[in-house]
Length: 249
Image 1 (cartoon, rainbow, N blue to C red):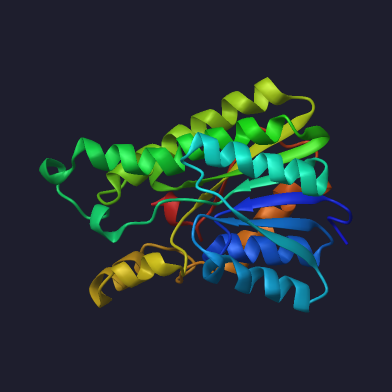
Image 2 (tube, rainbow, N blue to C red):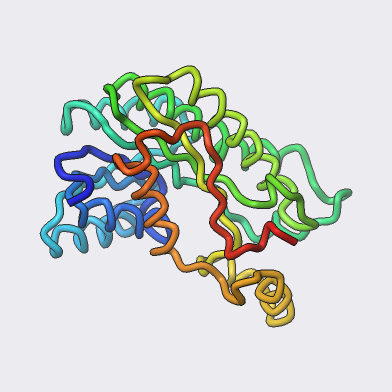
């Protein structure tokens, strides 16, 4: 198994891509802390699925935008696992009301909400994880292709993810050689985000992808596995695009 005896924390892993990452990591031998800020109903199905498959996992309640909550989460990680080998920052704020706004409708409070989770939350978790990580460890952050190439939708979200990309490159140098830090930049994936789109929008997004379809969460999880494990042992500070060629437009 590719992650045998590794200790991993996946934030925002009660559903979507985060859940697929947690399940795959456990399948590959890792003990996985499944984080979500919601209650037991959000987290336990993923943990139960992992355990039914013979894997090792436990649920961690924490709001990554709250410094005190993050501090408690990493205290529990230390108590229960003794340290950490892999962190995947999959937690993010998804809000359909913020996606297709005109410039004049974007308010400062929206920036504060999104940055609190996507940017500040990623930083707080990287900071907490670094204290528990030893040589050969890995941090995997999450960004989005609009942060790299621009788009007409998702201004606030893309801007927050642009900060994550810069943070990734800075931390890769700051934490080397002990810890590698990389970032996955997602294109259009079949997650709850697709439900925000009407039929015409879905067609338009799909036609912009050279491979002709949306990505599937298990495909993103495979990239996280690669970046979290030893197969990427000479890769750090990189943004790996996984988008079916969409950013080529």
